[in-house]
Image (tube, rainbow, N blue to C red):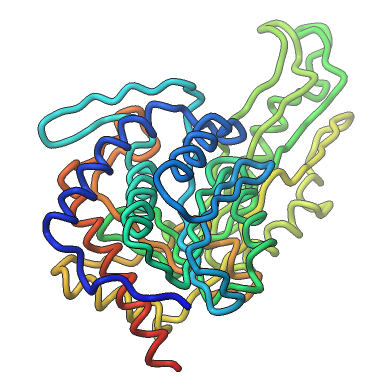
Length: 380
């Protein structure tokens, strides 16, 4: 049966844990992990865990890695998860180490959470601790990964799980509301032709511009409530050629699942294309979806997180975010997202980590674990 760890890491133990996390961070972040191309980082994670822990380490064909430290429990397990992929295509990443901040793409999102979980596992293994926890390191959280990694993990583990703690975002941030999204590839095509001789025939780029303008007016958009973004657009052949093709990617976001369904219905209706010029054709393909969901403010997971922040004298700011937690809600699995480090510039090449925040993140992870176990015990 699982046995609880000490109530709080002793000061030398905490110092050793954080020092190991700093050293591991250099190695982890240097390995680029673009979404769909996380194999090298995934292999590094699995190899490091097998070397530094005695727990069973599993790795699937997608590149997910997970460690079962429950001692074989079949029910009531807590999932601790952190995604390993990054938004930039770099295969090699350089860390710029400054006195206060370390800078590198992906160092905060989500390198810091990953290395704290890895070194936490090594610390527990050294004391031969078992807990009702499985720790997963998942792929394909960013971009068009469509939560492939966490979905595969949950497909296998969900019957054993009590809840899911997703480690992402910043140290003082949390999300109990999962921001839903739908992503599409829109395409326009027309006969094309000469810019002078065939002027007046349908132009795919012009039709795309008209369509996007009409779409922007069709729904009531509001920051923090519902948004859309035309992320990329391409098409045409030359300045004197009527564009025979155009393509655009479109993203819709909202925590309201009903709104996302309403937009999807309109996109596939004849109303969305009724003003299109003769000869032009329109097609739409859904290329990504993240289900919306919400954990009630009164849920024990929220109370546990609030208590941890109070004990650490840390602010706690809830926001609506799209994370791996989105995959848990359709499975009726309670999920909450919070971070273990501070910094900024997420999803930019100037992303940075406040290196001193790793210690507070380690304290937060240890305290959350103790509070989770105490909550388990109170429910027996």
